[in-house]
Length: 106
Image (cartoon, rainbow, N blue to C red; front, side):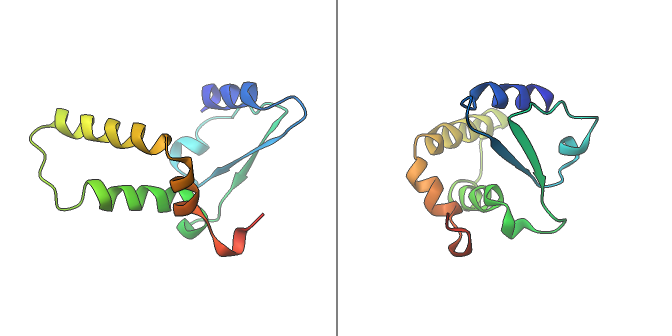
């Protein structure tokens, strides 16, 4: 987590500030995080998956690519996860559409 926070802080422009939304997963809470000055952590309430856009994206990807499917091997699962992950990262418009909330328009 600290490595991720450090990298995130390095990527944020000098006159900007980043907010990282955390959903309470165990590794979000383990140890004392080293938070860069240009990053703030926002912890979601327990059992509030509707507030976490990543949960929506993960659900859509799971249903599109993994539900009712038989994989030949663990390697085939790994390759499919990698393919889906790489594919979706190139589709920022689709990510924005999937994770958008009517009540959260900026």
